[in-house]
Image (cartoon, rainbow, N blue to C red):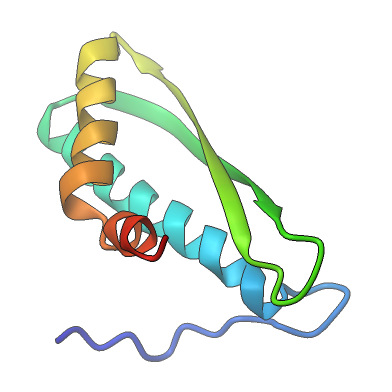
Length: 106
C-alpha cells in the first residue's frame, strides 16, 4: 500500500475547499498523473497540460454528485491526437483508481 501522508489540504472557508469538493479534485489529480505519464512514454512533447472539472450535485442532502465533467487541454509540439485520446482512455479505463470507483458507486 502506498503512503499518502504529508499532503496538506486547506479546508477552511472561503479560501479552501469543502470536503465534497475533494472528489472532483481527486479525479482530476489521478487523471493528470496517469495521462502525463502515458504521454511521456509515448514521447509526446506536451508543454502545457490543464484539466478542469465541472460537477452537478443534487440540491437536497446528501447533495450527491450526479455528474462530473472533465475537460482536458493540451499544448505542445507535434502532438498526436490519437495518442492523446488513447492516453485518456487508458487512464479512464485502466489506470486511474478513481474512475472505476465512481462507476461502481452508482
